[in-house]
Image (tube, rainbow, N blue to C red):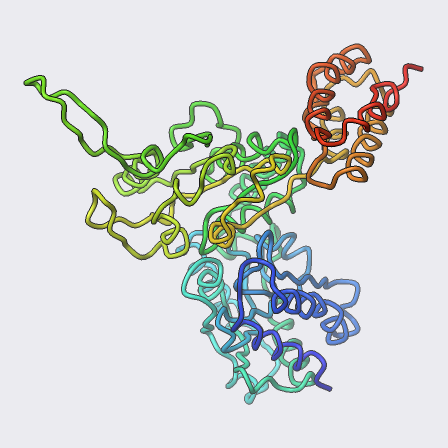
Length: 493
């Protein structure tokens, strides 16, 4: 049997054509990677069917450089960011695939990862395991995936792996035996909290990390999986993302809370010296963002032009000075002329480890500790003009109108006097807009999120905000406006 083996080889071949954005090759890669979930089910030991789970990923937002499928016990690894599991990882350049006993590395420092690997290896050395000398000789403590980002982190997080070189992927039977060998070792490693001290992890530390996530999710009304998918994208080799969606989906609010979470300061959004928020607009330029010249008067009263740093250079200098990470939140990103604003910084967004020459600096590079979170309003028609080179350098995440977020807001203690009709009308309104326009031109949930929502307040929201927005969305279909009456969606019973 070679169904899985051939699929792995096909994905390795497709890596040659890797692009972060959509393409025929990447669509085929996604199809192959997601098929691994079903193929791996057939490799599991029969007694593990009700214990182990399988999850594949082609990437969150844009395509991942290192796609994967993992086999895990939820008690050992509740999320991809936590605990131990077996994972098949494809090298960024497609030269190999590694079936690795690895760990969640998203929230760990390099020292933490190295420490856990050392401690886990000592556990395995002291335990009686299946004596299979041929397989033991093939097992490797090193894997090669990518020079940076999560790929490099998983290289460090590898405990032991079987490496399949391109052109030499073994039959499914061999992969199944390799998987069983790794799963035997996985069983010996600590569960997520139970006996965690054996790997130098204090339960309090774990609880704090989970509490941070719970705190942020309670503010933005996301579930933790959504949060971790987004954070994982921010800490890879290109630490910049864009949150895009219709107006009123909380993009800027979410961006600021993601920034605070990244910094390990959940909830500390206002006046946080490590978070910089700028809003782009049509006249925003390279000078404000990167560097420029400013007229100043000399002591002799002579007008001189002096170089000054824009927001990006100031943040980079601050990071280089104190070593602390910063987050730049760019609101309404697509309202500016992006190629003009970013200039040669477009290059550094992709190659952060390299330096370039700026007009007023001999050498400049973007620190890896500078995270960028942009927001884009998809109802703004200027979004179609977003430069494709810029799109390739950011991971895009859709924030769409979500009735579940609206429900969570009122379930959290805010008062909804309208009742279930509030949610029903909200969904009916957006169903009509999607039919008449498209998914980008809807009304976000945040318009309807108030400390207390009554029928009279809902009408005021409609008259002063939502109704005005709909008129703008239907600017070229004025005949449809009569169909969008407040009473149609929220009849006063």
